[in-house]
Length: 324
Image 1 (cartoon, rainbow, N blue to C red):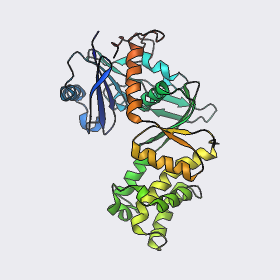
Image 2 (image 1 turned 180 degrees about the vertical axis):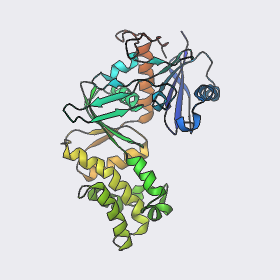
Image 3 (image 1 turned 90 degrees about the horizontal axis):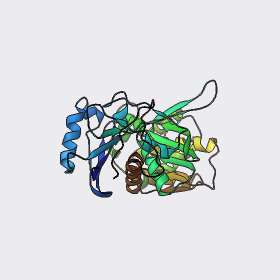
Image 4 (image 1 turned 45 degrees about the vertical axis):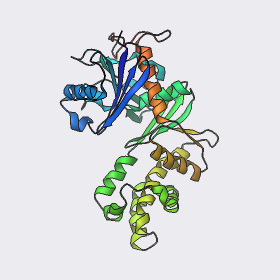
């Protein structure tokens, strides 16, 4: 079996890759060659990435994220959320025409009832798996990003999944529309540099519907109630606070920390939201989480004791991965 193994988180706009040899991390890279930039030339894009990593041609590749969506390289069905996270390693799907290349399925959650809610994720399930490998713990996990994911784990499986467009909304509101002129000079600034404005936004998110609160930001600036240079911090607090206030409405317990899994900058913002609202949070090291996820996927698919066979959705036998 190959000693070399590559894990790739391939999203819509960005891509990250990790190369392992004999289980040891050799190199990692990040670029802007997400689906929008790489499609439809996924195979050449992957070949170029492997060359940049310096990994040998025989290295096995496992990919997660939007690369498995309908607009990605190859559509891979979602797995049911009730399946334990540990099972994801046995559900890798081979990429047609690519030797030793696999995609991790996404996750689909459906609420019980006649008008049941439905939600999905691709890529975040691998981070949840990594967090579970590092420290198995039920409860709420929050994975902030363009599409923020709140996930309730019970028995090592996803019991609830709620996605918020917080990051995407922030980008859209900053790029055009009523609020854009207020935010133009604050792009890239840290909201916590203006802590009181951020806190005001978090608190305001609990007093009105989000669309009303968003217009309220403009009203505060034009009437002088909020300094123009504080508008960006207020907006960040408003968007992230809306997530936390809904979690509170659903009964988020004060005694159990929400585990934060994501970029340090976003996790700091959410940790501040938790503090402002009297809740606890625990930030996990995202690099340790992601590394643990890739190692678990490789070990499980290689058929290590207790892992079982690697089977793709629909019952098709998938080729086993070499162990990392």
